[in-house]
Length: 78
Image (cartoon, rainbow, N blue to C red; front, side, top):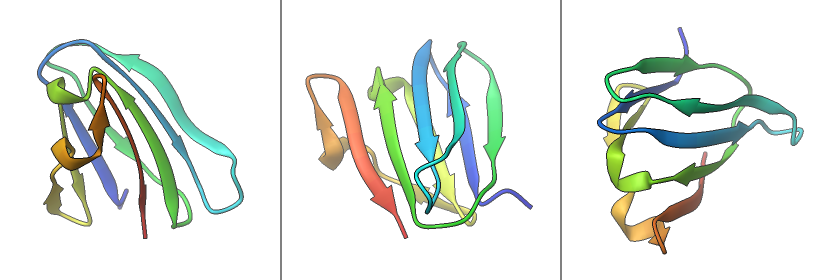
């Protein structure tokens, strides 16, 4: 099962890198789409138009708002 689940309430760009720094997900998510991302934690994420993305990690919602600067969220998931 993929530990990261993404739901898009609007178009938004997401990049996810795994423990080794390898990109495991990089794409523009369209409004209404959902995506599942797997890989080896910890993960490094960059989310553009972050207010339009709902993210859960191991089934628990992650609040992106504390990480948003100028509509882009940059953070790590352990």
